[in-house]
Length: 74
Image (cartoon, rainbow, N blue to C red):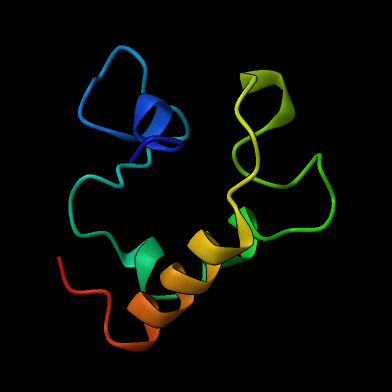
């Protein structure tokens, strides 16, 4: 939530790409989210460089992988 919810959370005024991650979402189940947060190309990785936020630490990416593998239940 620290890295993602500003642009993909409950605030309609800040939401980007019409993507909410604060509620159950198909993007969590199809691997697209994991692909974007772990992308090697900085231009494609989330959070984007221009946001001023750091890339997710590898430990957080691993937790996300495990959570998705377990069904990504909210």
